[in-house]
Image (cartoon, rainbow, N blue to C red):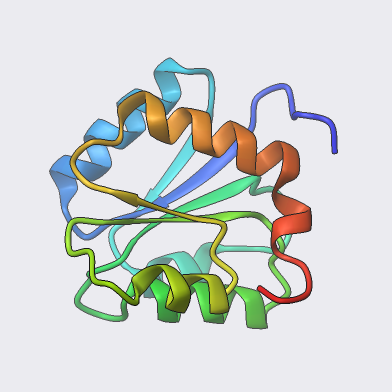
Length: 133
């Protein structure tokens, strides 16, 4: 899959400060960014086309990031999903993979690691969301 000229990233986090810093980081790196304060807001706005990657916070009040990932996959949204969390547990990677999540990253150490993972997910993410995930 060719890399889009200016990929569109949908970022979901209930923390306005985190959303602002992720928007700044990603826009500085050449991405189009749409931000959402809840999983419900994303679900209301998301369409199956026009998004190249989702960056979703795990812990949110209306639904957790894994549940949101499942709902996106149930809507046939194939764009890679990167889950970010400040609350890692031993089972999160397995649960996330089962929900179709491409990668799990720990907060607050996102920065360039997130940009690198997003670019890698967009370039090869379609295969990662296939059978077994």
